[in-house]
Picture 1 (tube, rainbow, N blue to C red):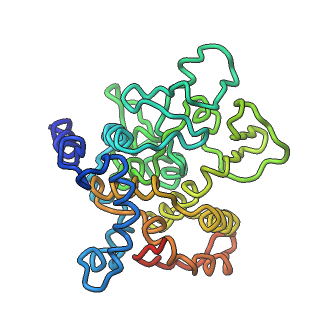
Picture 2 (picture 1 turned 30 degrees about the horizontal axis):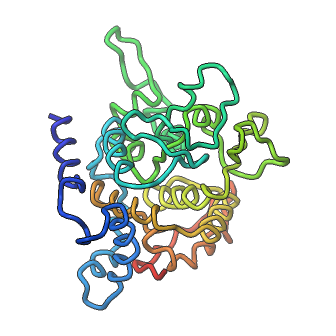
Length: 316
């Protein structure tokens, strides 16, 4: 039944089978035009979308309604999204087939380990905010509250998927999942993002640097805006705690690298499927007070006040 429900949901926005978004305009271009125009139209007085977007409670509820119920369902839905959008992988900007999830020849990535190159070109759906960070404060992650068939207790990710509804909502939230080359996904592990001294180019022309010595990953500039907006969204939607330094960094990236048309189009499709937008994308220009929270960190360096709600209208 769950598989059928997923197929029905996907079928409901199967754009390739429906009418063109704009008659006479290629479908892919139509999506980008829609991404540019829809937020502007929403700002018009009396437009129904303006009223809907003005109330951000729904957006900041995240995936709590579990319209995307679990990581496996998220995997299926993401395949659909990336069949509709011209986006590439997050870190190396590789084009890829969302069905087979393998990158094509148009890719600057070079495997660090020359063996088994095909497997290292496989694309994974990466959690920008790592799953371990989503779950480490949950009882199901910390304690062995689940039991296998032989009676042996266990905890961690598998237990949280089974016992914790909020963890399932966070783990499968589409706004926090992006395509990434498998080898880079494995090497990044659950490292935080930041600056790494020097210029390690271990993946060929792809400007992704990972330091296992410092448990740190430095993404290319093209990925910094989407990464920042994922972290800020997960903080606002689920209370994932950022240190003052982290929040300051992500606000800077968010402002320096604003959302472009493919990111906006992706957000619109996710809204159709999951039921909410990322306000840091569709309300980009209204987030000018974001850094007010970082001025009063608590004893652990965390921001003390709840984040202000960004506005609902995007002026490009």
